[in-house]
Length: 312
Image (cartoon, rainbow, N blue to C red; front, side):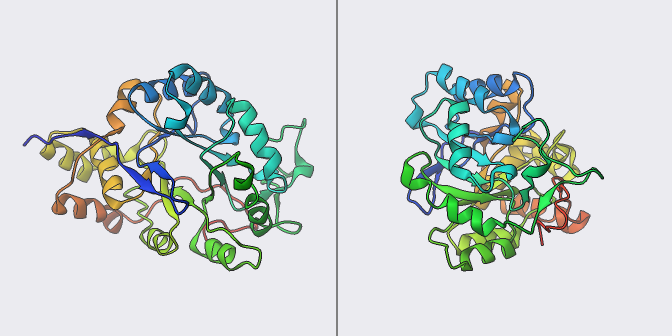
């Protein structure tokens, strides 16, 4: 049977009223000049949503590609993220990100992780790094700071016009509950960007965020490095049945669940492919839902933030 694929042009509504394109390009682990080439290829293929972060060290490439694409800035939804060494100074960090991007504003600015890294352990003044202690563990600061304080500072940023919206990333339900219940909280995060794929469906977190009008964004939607889900037997079977590629199946599953999905690729053909989706039958959709039940859940991105428990 042959299935009709179409370019994903759907947008979803943030709690600010802004529209966010449902399928965007992720740029994590895009090294050397890959980020520039992938963003340029994506914008030429019709993408209108680019996701980067200070710690990716490619904001300059992303910004240059946006400039060189010829696509008007106001037509592109751009997200970047506050790194964990700068939780105490998000306004300064945002200014530095905008300088690297060569942009006047971003559409969404996220707290990248709920844990703060201790700047006393930074080496060579490299603020965009992961400072470690003598034993090699991450220098996590849980005594002098917490993400509630970061959020209170983040809340001031939309007023500056330098970001249209603010949100979080890698926040658990418990972390979100703490943030929303904090006395200084005035703004509900516009988004929570987390790892989601058929081996980590995150149903409970998705439902919680939906109830609070927080947009879920899925990173590592194909299972992260080397896209292991594209070799998953259930996915291959559905792809063959529908005469599409495995990537089409997985991205379509995400899109059908109703949140933002951020596939990352540096291959121009794959970038174009990742934007093409179709409607899965109920049977195929449920078969993908069952993968994690049969095989067990698997989190790929799980750095050690001890003593802070990121996913508690």
